[in-house]
Length: 430
Image (cartoon, rainbow, N blue to C red; front, side, top):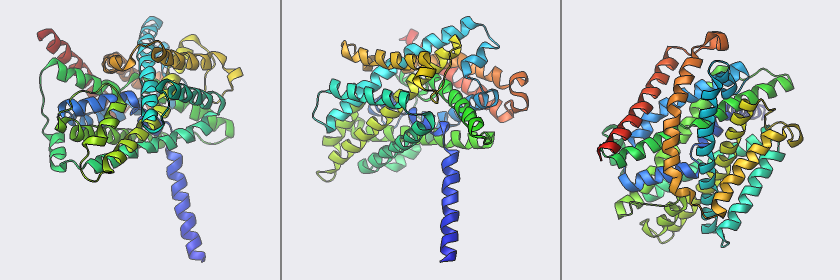
């Protein structure tokens, strides 16, 4: 009995240590697969089958490098990304970038709200707008009235809904040999449409809002550690958290492309309008038992709902952190509403603007891939700024980026820039 007790306690300690590692990195990575991301990945699978899977493998080390850099900056300086950037560069540059990020984020929020309502409608027979509105109220109530460290536990649980895409991919039973070949033998087309989707994939994977959010949440973690008298998360823990979160994100993205490639592209469905369209399309097209398609649809829909509940707070929160940094407002999800009214007001306004887009009949889904492309283009100058900040010893001291970090950030800048230039050239040539 003593031995069993010792083994149980050791296992529990390991589980607790692993849970403590997971934080902003996991939440940020999972939020990257929000409904707007789902729609983009699903469109890639529907239009090009397995043909763009190679981008998943390419983006993983790049997004880890960028997010690790953002997390390191937030943790070491104790300041958000905009605040740090404004200490080095012109406020006009910072304002310009923040405005672009706010516009893209609000469009994404609107798309996510619409997707949650549509996905819930597949499971609950109520009007989409009613379901969307209820979801918005719940999201805002949690984000405003629940403390960050309690709220972050719910966000970590929602990250588990990424598993739904793994399950769905297994149900549709793809040709795994073809899947593996697609990672290493890419089928590249030089058309404008192909590169439009590639830039959208890069934009929805390496997204500016993720830069702002993870840096800000590492600041939150640091403040909380100081408040309770514990040591702050070290950089090794932050790197592990970030690597796990980004890997989970890309696995989810990979399985979305695989699923839609099998059930949509291979059945002649090459265009979808919403993330929930992909879920609905699974039911009649999945082969096997009569219930297989129904199960696939339900699981995929649950993934959309879970990722939407996770993604919207991150999108709205990153807007609030960015705007608050520029304006010098008190910020942080650990503050009560009365202590940071302007910060929470931005969260409410950004979420309300997304909801309003649905109410007045503007279809945010049509601008969804365009918003992802904008994110991809906006990320180019931001990555350049991150490269400079990461090597600034006056800001980071001994925690400047090493050779590997520097090389990976340069590679990310090159890939994003090259993709954008190819898109522009292909569009002009068309």
